[in-house]
Amino acid sequence: MRVLLPCVAAGSILAWNGRACAAGSDVPADDVKLTRTWLVRAGFGFGFPVQSEQEQLVSEESFGGPRFHVTGAFARMLSERVGVGLRGIYGWRSAGAAVGESDARPITQAPTYSEQFGAVAAELPIVFDVGTNEVATLTLVPFVGPGWGGVGIHGSAPWKAGPLFGGEVELFAPHGHVGVTLGAYFLPLPPPGQLGGHNDLGSFFISLIAGADVR
Image (cartoon, rainbow, N blue to C red; front, side, top):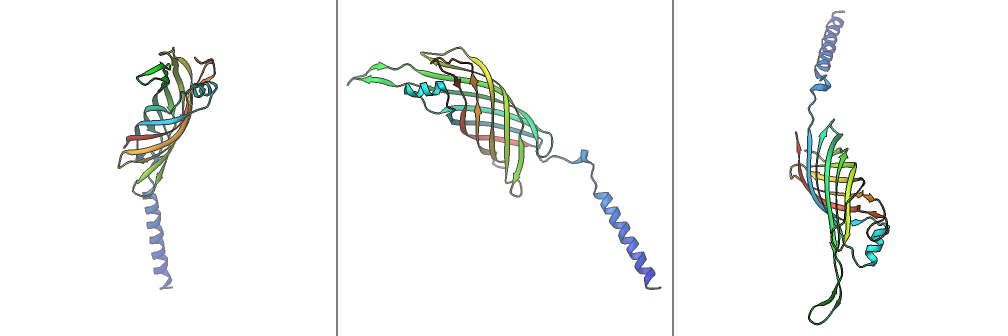
């Protein structure tokens, strides 16, 4: 009995201490701080054009080449993994070729083909940490919004409106403030294009980005 009483007392003290520690470790959800509050990105990239009726006509006329774009984006993190943000995109492409040549100079100069487009899109970044000590983050970013673009032969053409939608996968090194993205976007414009076909100024792209994860 003398041995049992000290054991019961010790067990009661340990149990009480365990409950006290457990209660002390409960931190209200409102007091949990995010490791990142804002995502800020700027990028430059190029891509292979989405195939469309007008793109086929452009290729047949010996025009082509990659589409280039610059982007800027910022997002507010709603939780440790999910945020909501806004991005802007501006893109362009131009091409021209000589049809015939003499020994001195081109005999005939082909018309210049040019594209320009812009868009403002809402985005929903979903962030995952890669490695320990915040080595990198992997972010899935779907986006959608209105876009405007124009395709011109012999100069600029009036811009038309269309829906922009797409997404990208971003690998970003927070300590280096640099990263790379792979993705695609689509910007179908009302037909016909200037060459008479349905047009889409989208592309499958790769971009280099710079930015910061702001706490």
